[in-house]
Amino acid sequence: MTCPKRNRALIIVNYQFLWAKEEFRPRMGARREADKLVKALSKCNYDVRLFLDLTAKEIEDVYKEESRAEHGKCFVSILSSHGEDGCIMDCQGQALKLTRIYNILSSERCPHLAGKPKIFFIQACRGNRFDDGIYLETDSAPEEDCFSHYLSIPESTAVMFSCSPGYVSFSNQWESMFLKALLEVLEGEERKLKVNKLMTWINWKVAFLCEAKGTVYKGKKEMPCFVTNMVEKVYPFKQDRECSDYPDHSNPTNTIQSSVHDAI
Image (tube, rainbow, N blue to C red):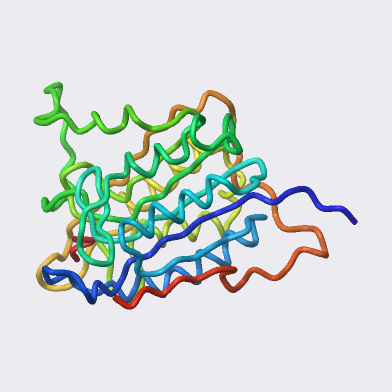
């Protein structure tokens, strides 16, 4: 039986920060989540590659390698690290702008993905403010320009962030609010939704069903958000793995461990 070309997924998780010049809290829950994400995406017909604790240059090199690969109908990437708005932190605590990653996969630099859906899920803080979960109605404009870096998102791309601009993203020793919701969607019937409805469902799960626990941050909330410039209906996780000659991808096909503020 001849199987169609499978979709590809790339997961990058920075969780130890052993060589960071500033002190960054280890993110052990992120490492545990990574294996679950590999398994879930594999079941949705993706070839998955997982990389751990990369420098900024290594992250860019991995995406450049991905830009030269043969792709199926869709590409998905998950980035999990400390961060700030518009950036993620590498394993040495250095900021890497997300625009640099988007540009590597633009149609000009990555013809294999030209016109194909590219979907990013980004688990990282985007500031240091805390969301108290208060319902608020306002007609005022945003206090700051939060959307300038969105303009560099390539065509046919959707990006979902774990929190709103300026706010922290919550995780613990087991999991994060955002990627837990993503995993629940990938493992449920909601995975068959088109991409904008799927992301709206994740928003609802995190905003209404999740809140921080403990004595310091008890009751604090998180509100994911997403931006998309896709004009076609895209169902990125609708297809389950069906071909009998597909390899078992419950383990990552290629893992790099470098020896080298998701602040909560």
